[in-house]
Image (cartoon, rainbow, N blue to C red; front, side, top):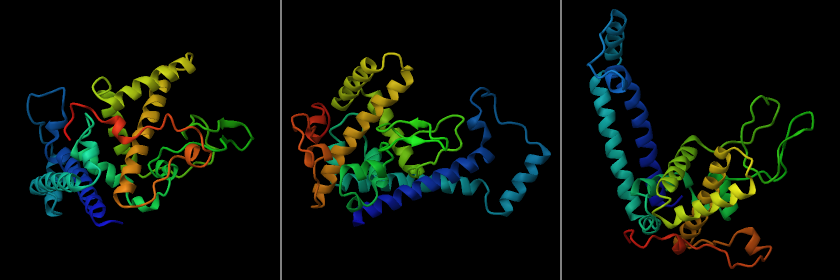
Amino acid sequence: MFDLDEKILRAYFKMEEAQRQRLWMQRIWHPETFNWKDKSGPLPITRSTAIKYEEFEKMGFGPEYCERMKTLEENARQELMDFAAEHALWPHFSRINGLSRYTCGAFIAAGGDISRAPTVSAFWKGMGLDILNNGIYARNGKMIQPPGSAPRRIRGNTDVERKIPALPHVTKIGEQIRQQIVRFSSRSKIGGHYVRFRAMVDAKNPERAKVFNFKDAERRTQKLLYACLWKQWRIAYRLPAPDAYAFDILKHPGDHIIEMSDLYDVDAAA
């Protein structure tokens, strides 16, 4: 793994663990911060709660531990953003509305070792965006999910072999990026692609539940963005970055290939 990428990954994992520990302790020592309905003040301390406080403090998990995790989380987040600002991908992120230094660092952490993804299809798979080549069948031979669809859980079907899922932090970062794409859909070029994809899937599947069309358009837009970023990441490290299989191997016309510069927003910072 390249040095800067490794530093970003270390900072991200440190931030994530500090956040997990901080939230755990915050729920114990500051439960009022999670009581959104009642802002009248702290909850009464029962005998059971007092005993828990005493034992947790003996173990070193007192209020000072919560504050230490909070500080560690803030420092690690800043470290992540500082490293991201030095990365070759940041100039591309900075030109798209809604994508911040944190998002850039988190994306790099999710991508991991870019040298292990020689094709965009391999990168999509590592980022949890692959599709089914042959479909998924139950043991009785019934097709549960058709070829070309995104792998997903099927309610009531426990006899289906599951694919290995993407790592939790990878899917979390992907969800954050999808939310930003939709949130800025009216103010960014990448959001314009989401609107185009949504219109296309709505026309193709008018009877399907709207939530499925929404997820479909989100996923298509995310894959487009990831493909462009993968290519720039590979180029920055002087690694081969071939076009997608349809264009590089099957030699389909490349008139519709989207480049990273096609996603830049005019009013975004360079």
